[in-house]
Image (cartoon, helix red, strand yellow):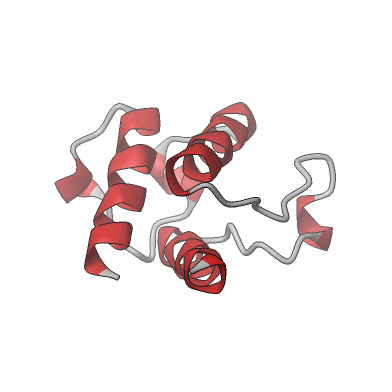
Length: 86
């Protein structure tokens, strides 16, 4: 899943206008510099890139099954969705 992980990091880095090398798994979206609108745009980009449906409601993120607390948790959740689709 390294390729999937790298693509996720690239999408998030593009959204934050950062070099992917600057991102660490323990960083939160806020640490990366992504606000709530940027997070929604990132999720749309991930859905499009991997042809998945992310179970995330921006209006109630705490009720979501999709953990957005850190980059690592986002990677794990997307990898799981990609694996389930395969």
